[in-house]
Image (cartoon, rainbow, N blue to C red):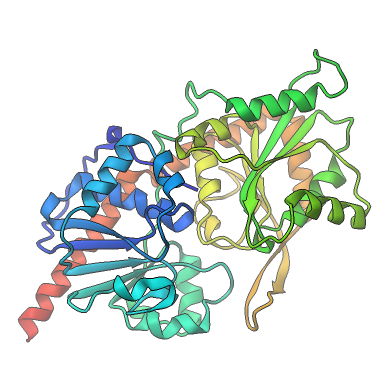
Length: 419
């Protein structure tokens, strides 16, 4: 999901001079996780570095015009401005899965290779959600000068996979805490209508507003939608004043999502508690309103690179119930969120890869606690927002990016002196 930076996020960060042109290659205009974090970094650098020392290139995925048009006008303008500059990078940042790095004809990216042959320094930015990175990535990762990963989890898993530990560096993601700000934020009208319709199905217009659990994810095995439904339907029934909102979209699906849900719940003999599948496309500028419609965020996924919806929900002051494993543990703990314990690690469908099996009974208890103790849950949400503001704002993380670029510039100069 997208973290959008607006002009109000002008940085006060100062850094050592970076006398080299930096070009950032990423799927800026494609939507999704890599897109959103790349936009976060790019807007900060666009507002911080001299214009003639920074540019960006659409890379690894093709532009999705509906996504681009859904961006706030200021964000769109800043990205287009950075894209219009000539790209003659000294520092090239390849921000994507490594399968398209180097001159690569896959999906047509041989015409836009990253890193380009004339780059003086090549940086890779990537992540993975299991106990190791794909074996096919290792040689591409080791061919780079530096690899940025978002968490210590990735530092260890990449190292164990054979990536040179000397080139690995942790660089966290940022969340736009001004954009994702619960103050005076109104609920999303289209979702609010669905909630009211669900509430009034029996013709009782005076029914109290339910406690809304929101989950935001792609409809795939990694996100563990089966585990979420099993825990929710096992804990609640039609007598509980609750509602689960599944903000999701198909991901390599060959049939409607509702059919998957019906087949699974029937096979498991699960009772039906109130829920809605909210598959409507919403503009990126409407994301804060989506979170503002909920009382809590829940996602018992099996593995996360970072967990952008988790971070966005925390920035919006929601209590976050999510698996206590992988990338999101970088910013989630028992004081600022509601981590779901892990029963064990289980085999993935790729040899040598494992990910988490969250404790669904524990998730049931956490969800029930939220419903029975809404004020305590709200306080957890308040602490989550505080963490995002103090540790993961664009200003804080942007300073780390600038320090990294300054370090790289110094390394380039040192190489020249050694020649």
